[in-house]
Image (cartoon, rainbow, N blue to C red; front, side):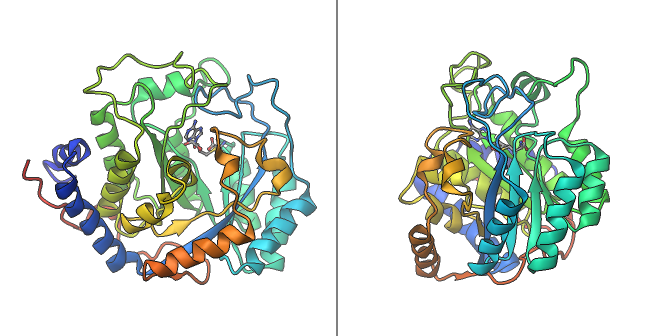
Length: 363
Ligand code: SAH
């Protein structure tokens, strides 16, 4: 790590002057254009199950929410969804779920095999902390990428909001990410911005960790309180002074996104649904012009969407075909094009070896 980098990242996170921030947005957009180009890759998201064994204090799918109706898509429904993604011209399907052990190793492997047989899609999995044997089997079946956010690099805060299922048995997500990489997956991780108890210093370290892990994909979105969760009711919140507490604002998310782009120039970075929830009219455009190069339209069958409310209002972002046409127009109006093919990471070198200068901070 370059000396002084953490300090500089921290200064940018604290910057509030709109004119100075323009310099950050411009630098991120320039580096995005140089390293990943003008293509915006669309990844079709299928939320295949909302069963979950975990008790994450932030998430609306947590096991403790007994009133929530649970579903698991059938093999045929998942295949139909993947075919729809291919039909729409997307290059990737993302299969996401709660941590659901009803998703068996063999069932998932068979679905991955069939998607790879029937389409030319890249397959991304986001199924939580599964044992290495599952990850190995799914990779052998053809899965290309795995998303697992570390949520925050602050160990105390992480363990408070993401308790282990079995007392004393903790899986470190960063260790799992390294395992995934060794198995040959492209790896994605990321954080929520504005978790109660998240300090500026820890957020700066999150961004440096993106670089140290040399992530292929980085997902960044605002923390959105869910009233059915302890964190949404402020119960698991750490007490931080207002000066230390990171806000879950749109601008703060954009700062993290822009800094992630500058420190990890080659990464695929989505303009996330959570950002679009905070700003339905302009969230995607802002994300795409401040470092992002990916959007993940939701292709989950409408009957299941409202049961996959990891945070409120998520199901209101309806990615129907009409919205998709609007998204394509938005991409073109930014002078960008819709990406073709799987859109994997184009690798020139490890993130830490690509020396992109952060704009100097003169505050
Ligand atoms: N079970 C999988 C997928 C979880 S959903 C896993 O744990 O990896 C994907 C992401 O949604 C999470 O990693 C988290 O960063 C985000 N998320 C969950 N609850 C949220 C909330 N209340 N506000 C914003 N993002 C949230």
